[in-house]
Amino acid sequence: MKHACIIPFLFLSPLFGFTQDDLTELDKRNGFKNIKMGMHIDSVAGSKFKKDFKEKGHYPAKLYEVIDPENASIGEVAVNKIEVKTYKDLIYEISVITAKDTRLMKGMESALGKPIYDVRNESYTWMGKNLTLKFRPASKTTLELLYSSAIIRRMMEEDKKKKIDDIADDF
Image (cartoon, rainbow, N blue to C red; front, side, top):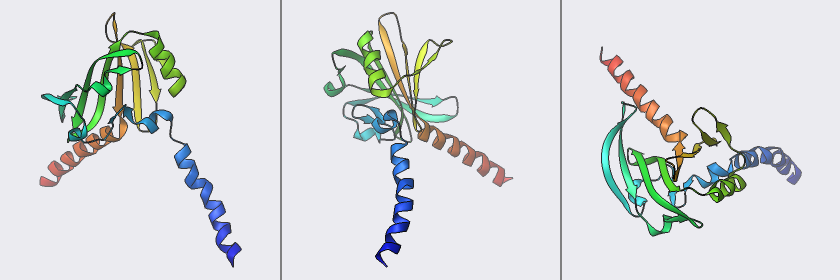
């Protein structure tokens, strides 16, 4: 009888383990240092509200600047500015502006793997299941790391569809 309980477990255990291992390193990190995607903005130390805006003309969002000594550098590379965009007070985009340094790209390649290079936009992109990271020049002396959450963006799209369905139901 003991063997009858163990055998189904042995067949199902690789399926459950596969989903954990299937996440990329980018997905496991889920953001920049202590600022994580989907995190409530009130949980971020040093966040200051800058303005309200509409993302892509449809979605009400807020822009915050994060000033925290813990996020002041990436190794020896100085971080100039961190901006965070939120939807319903949940973080969906993190923009990190750093000093231009070749060690940053080398470090990211060793941690996250090889990126995809986009010739048109002159940017490098790492893709995960739930997160995208773009690495591109922001100016002649700075670089931008742009983290974007697919989960919150899907939530934005679903909310837009719900609004359309609500309007359609009113007819």
